[in-house]
Image 1 (spheres, rainbow, N blue to C red):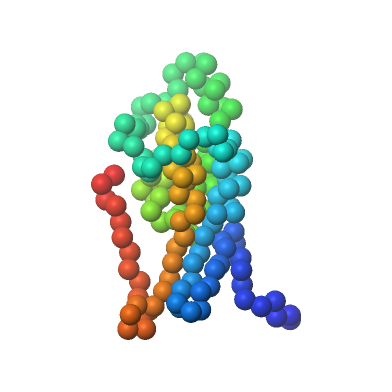
Image 2 (cartoon, rainbow, N blue to C red):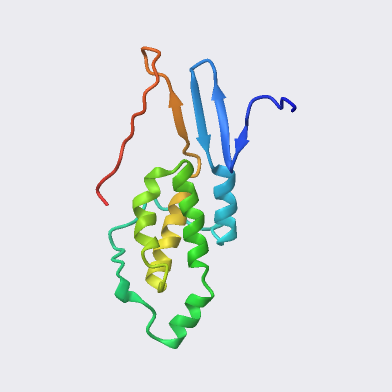
Length: 153
């Protein structure tokens, strides 16, 4: 065995330690940049500030109805994109879970509106890619887990 020092990266997550303030940060910035790049979300793409806007009314009955729509959706990597986003939920971005749940319901037969919702989430990630999951001790020097959820979705 060989000691390689402190862990800096594991399973696509970057680990940053701040010993002065007893803080550990986990981020998936590198992984997410690769995801955004592989699904053509580049520097020209405008980011959005809301995770899944209310104008997305997704339903299972929205399956492609025409041959052209079906042909378009066969060229879209819907399942691959949703799978990549699911990995981020497991590791560091639990706030995405409701939105990913919404879009993953339609993996069997998505249409353009479903794909637009996925691209919206990717644009949200682009604008918030620097956010990290932070663990730190409270003022009493104790460790505790506190979570916040936006339940307005």
